[in-house]
Length: 119
Image 1 (tube, helix red, strand yellow):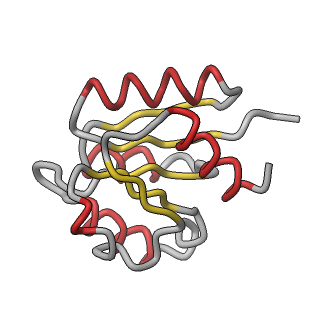
Image 2 (cartoon, rainbow, N blue to C red; image 1 turned 180 degrees about the vertical axis):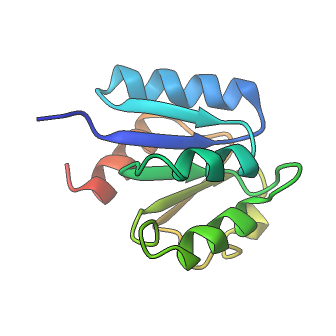
Image 3 (cartoon, rainbow, N blue to C red; image 1 turned 120 degrees about the vertical axis):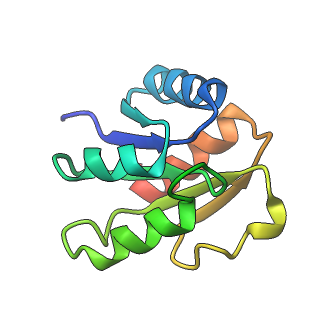
């Protein structure tokens, strides 16, 4: 069985590195993007099994990325897990499969991802 791929989009390099380590340790392939533009660039050539998406980023925000994904029928079914330090923005991405507030526990994010991916 091939590894499932997760695209992690966050402007904070510490969060990106942490999520990459957590997901890699749990058997996932991980691709990271530091902003929405980079995420959309990557999505032009890849189709991850799941996306973790920050809300507040320079340039293209999480909600902008989410809307761009929803408009693309090839990408619209990819589940999105919102990970943000702004818990009051929980519903800003209405089609999100899950929402996690920063700081989060590694086992919590893995449990959420496994649940969404049906593992």
